[in-house]
Image (cartoon, rainbow, N blue to C red; front, side):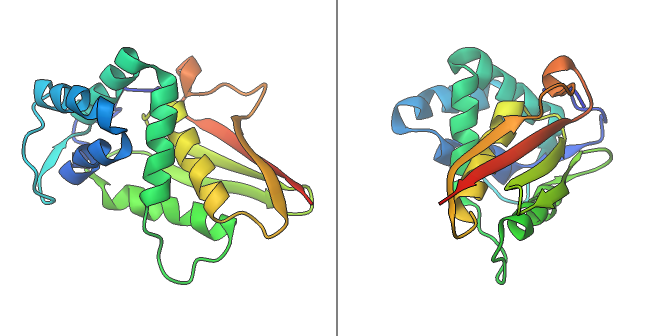
Length: 186
């Protein structure tokens, strides 16, 4: 699923997912975000409203085109910070696995994409994580960074989240991106 392109015209996103974007940007950007949401027809502030997923992707593209990919990274970080995790989640791997459930709860109708933990090697201090959805890489990288910081292993410092080198990503119009989460131990 290349970035910003829904592969299924039946795919939908919950209105709260779009409207929560306002909580993920700093105060100076909120009027600009309101303008983008309204220009794309997002007005209803009820949690039960569903919009075409492509509309949500158009909003994300306009945000990134207007203020840059760094802002999408920041929005993703804030989304990850504010995310409520189910009780009992104690490890980074558990938290990462739960992201797919949250994603599926806010998307429906056909091929909406998914998240998947590919591998975890605590000894090597490395996790590989697959994002196969049409959202921008920087948004997902931001989510992963905040989740990794929130659920970092006890002795972890210098956490990094990067696209896996030498592998095509959604930025190259590939169907998915592999992210590598690494950390140092003290």
